[in-house]
Image (cartoon, rainbow over all chains, first blue to last red; front, side, top):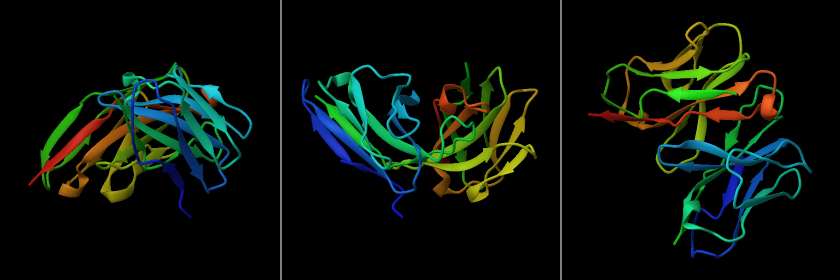
Length: 115
Length: 116
């Protein structure tokens, strides 16, 4: 039982390049999330998927797109990377979003640097 | 709308001393409360949670937190810290009624630095 896995662990991009961050969970969770973590800012929600087939914007969605490929996988795409997107990205999952009790399980993170 | 305020961005403390990390929240509805810990270069893991019942909640690694509804606080405490407790700690709140899909709202974090 690997929990939440993310690939890659590290990535360096040039401004304007695109890339996709991958996330998968093996806990049969319905809800999945993408956060970014910046120094002194805590975690901010980019996008979430309450269930397979649905996605919704979080607090900071600009510059990102997501795909809930199936119940296990939730990817985050940067179409044209900008230096402001340099951050650590975390994927998380929970049994059921929208039900109040929302213990989330986090992946190890992807450190992205945009030059 | 909910918000979480962690009153201290950094807390230095000597080994074996007690520590309190402060968290206050704002919400117009009842909430669930969480503390997560992030060790250097790792993801977040749940330390403890308050859902209902006893206001004193015990978590892993000897940590505990007390929910105070009148003061809208959920402070984290440990009576004697170890070097290995050096980490960043995040307080988070979730709407009891699933507003915004029950998403977690995080505070900005408190870095606990335990010195020998």
